[in-house]
Image 1 (spheres, rainbow, N blue to C red):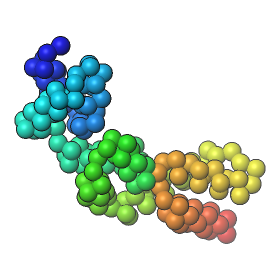
Image 2 (cartoon, helix red, strand yellow):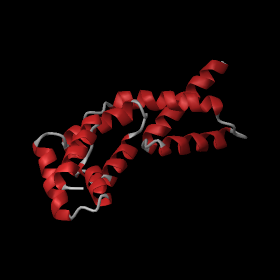
Image 3 (spheres, rainbow, N blue to C red):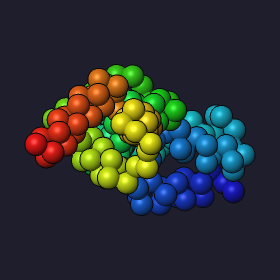
Image 4 (tube, rainbow, N blue to C red):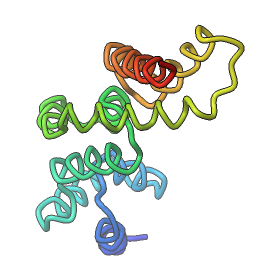
Length: 158
């Protein structure tokens, strides 16, 4: 495959969904392009606005938070795996609203609480904490939401 063919294919690939440079480099590597050719193709994709790290990161953060219901920790980890710069990650994560994240987490935990099978309250709490940390939420957020759920359950019993 020639450079121009690869450029054409990658432009179509980037047109379908936002991509980051790391995704494109992996694809070019699998097609066995040299580092020099890869850099040339990536520079052209950036020049023609098919590839934009900031746009990709904003879309990734928004989608994973809203649709995947991921927490900040998991989103940040996944972006680091894709070798996005710390500056861009911080800028994109600043858009997330903590109140929205808290309400998403509260909804997730309430839903999970209804279907968790546990011997006692301690085991239930541990399972819910494990679930929420796997979704990428911070421990203090998790504890705050769990305490709120426990208070609501105690209020229902009175």
